[in-house]
Image (cartoon, rainbow, N blue to C red):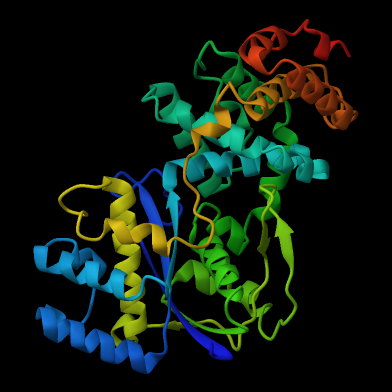
Length: 394
């Protein structure tokens, strides 16, 4: 029988704060383990003795360096396969996601649920990511400038993201540029509201969203959670956000537009506790899982990871954020519709027309036409990415 209150221990790997262009670590992993303090202490003590681990503590980054350490990782993941949940984030892709969140969403906010429903955010994020990893110097400059803007929240217009650069001679990227420039006032208003706040200080950091998604996942299994995290400045700053979930017994689920309802609530028995790993072995187990996942996603299946990579699928939880290029596949209705929608929004921006007026009717018409011609979607893209195409005769 599951306990009324379950202890959850959490730690991360690949932390780089607001720097999502970190060259040393391309993935961030946030891990958790459901275990009580006594069991964790006994387990870690036994592992340390069995493998003669130096320092009296399990540290994932150290275990990755030796054959003996990799055996420890394999054993930990195997022993706790059904009690570990890890969320993994591709940092550069998350920068693309943040681009959508802070550049596109402010102008679309009044009907943002509609755009999420048709996966427009995933389309834009994956499109930007592909551009980013193309190794183009222009792409590097745009993303580094965007990151600098978000980290500094400087009171400047967004033109400098593009004005000194040549974007590719491909309409989607030119349309993104057009959208940014024409809505810079709305975008800057959103950014200015974050200036001087904790959210603004850690605007690109991933720990809080990772912990929240992990706890929502655990909330499906346990009535109440007692959460311990390794010391984290970003999470400490978000303490009040998590305090709001203390003693919350209601269960709220939301359809994330994939036909599956997911929880957005959990119940904490007390404040999240920030503790030192050497005093709480549960943190050490979470650290091992986080390091293993970050390494596995970074390096894939090779001699370094082969002894334990098979356990990774069983411990994935929360809502990992990694690229999925199916969202920009021109053979799909969703991607075709979103490319046409991007062109439509750019045209409306140029013409200084309200973006959202008649948007439902427009999408309904596009969906109808594409559904009738499923084998001709690429041609449809080419036709309707012209400014004089029928969809754009306002």
